[in-house]
Length: 240
Image (cartoon, rainbow, N blue to C red; front, side):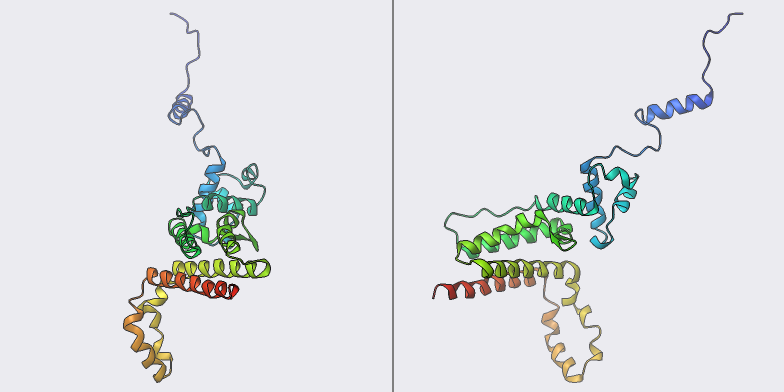
């Protein structure tokens, strides 16, 4: 009877070997290899479903099936990761092309519509414009167009800082309001009408048929026009 020269593999060993082959050579259950891109993508997904206040490296790590310490190889802190998300999203901002002799009104209206498009396609941007009281670099790059445009029209110093800030802040307030509360101009927003005085109820009921017709486009288009009009008044005063 011939002797065998090698040890046969046990059924358990064969099972492990087969599993390794099916998984492409890596152990079953091992998380996918981390990368900066994977971390950013997971962060964006989290921010689409929860507020930035609840955002932590631990939650991102859990989503990626890894540990928080592994993320520190790519981002030294929560703030650094949020800033990176802001940069990543804001890089997708597209300023409409403008002609060399185009009016400042059209340029700023183009900027407003560009930010509107960015917020519609990537609503996460509304959460990462500022991190812990600091404006992110990504948003600074986007908003710089407003300051440069108003500077070219003659605003300087405190006036330039004030009107650039107010313009951007009001634009973002409109976008956030419509993103999270468009239902406020629907019939549902009058559900508590019976708690008002009779004359107050009558006044609002007269407006109700028109109030419920308002769309997000109506609100944003009119809001943007009013922002431009306010700057026209200010800049006209400089030329007197």
